[in-house]
Image (cartoon, rainbow, N blue to C red; front, side, top):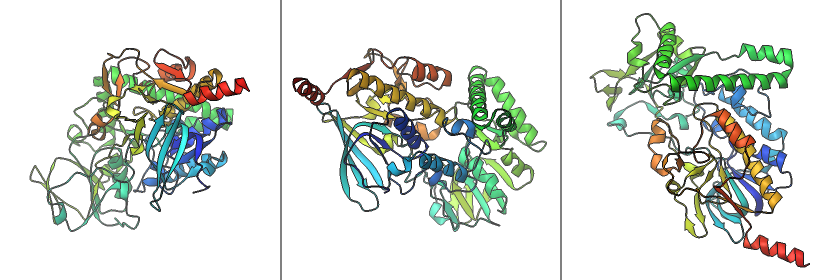
Length: 500
């Protein structure tokens, strides 16, 4: 812990990853008079970029858009985890945000009092087991959407018979030596696509075993135009132009895939065929049964996965596991894969709101009964905001807009003397659908535990950056669905001041 934990703050930020650091920056820039603290359950800042230590860990979005708008990214467009972690921590240190972080502090539950317009948050110190409470007017939850303490590992028949080592990317042993070993990576998502080429350089061979193919696109790790723009316009202006260029490109690709899925599928297949050996069974291993961007596209920087396959260092098998054996796995097709190390890159366990439970005036909040408002608040829950980034673009683009809007909301409340903001649908019969309309398995496993979204703004969770810029940055904060009020404690205080 960098400083003694306060007992009361204006805003409590939960999570010291890329979202929490960003939220703190915007809050102290726009509302320097407000006190805040950041709770971090782990012993280090950086979130995802500190947690994951598997070989090759990197971004799968370009860093000119994944990085903060307020801090130019000065490195390759796609960079490894260590460089991203250093960037996030540098941003925190530059603005004194690191001094507001309280490590080993996990928010367990939060109870809201409308009379006082205060949250009372129960906190566990994960290093000592001690408990204490903190009160605040607002909670800003920046804990992401998955559990940090464990990943998803399905139970495989006969797994205990395997004589080698089984590891999950979320708990990577730092002393694991895969040089000269036969490695089997189970999975086909971004983690598997990252691990296979990273391990293939020194392993005897790496096999990626997938039940269902994913779309994989080769991307350059360097943005040459960004370098030229920085040289021509200067670093800050060049970064701003590059960022806008890449935002437009990301959104254009996504819209093209949504509107013309068949053409997008053919285009991706064309690039895959160019990168793979002649006669390679592309349709067996790189032709998913779903349309592009129904799930996130996987990036292969400079085509590294395809290069490993061409060079014979890696291979892809599309099949299902019947059981583990002493020396590998037996597949449903009857084929066996021998391995010394098995990596279960089988995904995440979704956890909403950092696992924190909420109570409003004595009534427990069931997340599945709430509706997301502007992608940042929950129906019926006052003074609670959260940050969930884009799934079809760089995470931080959405988080930055949410932070800006949060600060605008606070300014509007200050101007009118309100201390409570509560979203309530003007149409109680509004149809709803899942909060994350996304086909990834880790989302589908937890869909019934997450909030819902409506069928119209501001209750529809947008994936459109241009629409979000309009809604979150430019349109008024007020609308018919957001109710402002003063607490009884505030009204009494105001009346006392007037009488005095």
